[in-house]
Image (tube, rainbow, N blue to C red; front, top):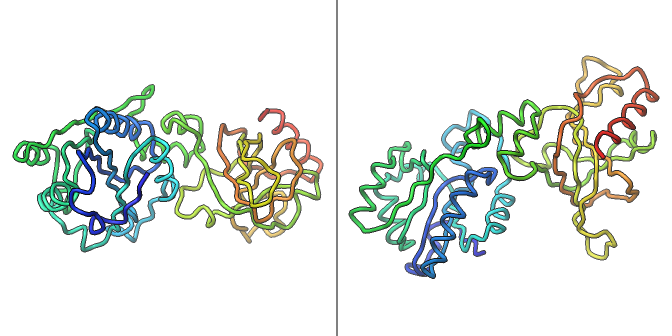
Length: 319
């Protein structure tokens, strides 16, 4: 997959018979996948190029900086997921206030038509574009009809009672309903980051953990506090004997209430993962933690022995 930074770096007519979809694609969930697979199939049928036109940062961060929008994936993770789907080109537009003032008509003619040389557009049922989201499907249909560009509109995707959307997935994750979120994602929600040193309490009680700080997962949404059954991939370092395999694990997200000595001093949230049946030093290693199901809420125990017994129960529940 080719990654292009912004429309100004596109050579006119550099890509043959382009089929384009446009959006943020946060999470690259099942609804996104449906649109993208449709686009790829149409491009292949005409020997053309499938292009995802997306943005970095998410427009929300520029247009509403006072509000925090937690993302489902980092931008690099999003691009990797798009590549795995088989997209030919991702154009990642540096989103700015100046760019946000581009009208829908100018965006269509100056960028899609003249820069990208679009032949066909595939978008979702709720697509809008241009300054203040002024351009709706009616506008897009009109522009396409005038320029003989084909337009395909993909219907909403339902999973059980849910319309698949990034917003609904966020709602489930905030409540810790990981299995429902994963059904809409079509995969497991995950974090990636480098393991940091903790205070060693896990090792002292026989359950050494690989720790991530929330800031290490960048702008991603933080799951509800609790204990989760997870799968952890250790991304090999140069010279490491560890293979790029998934290991069963359990992960605690929270503030470790059993170890709090001062009720008024709330420690920072930590993401702590214990790999089952694996004893290896992971400090500094990059890991990917995939969340499978929630086992229980985080709670305070009367002492270490009670905590250890509960961890043993968590391990059995996760197997």
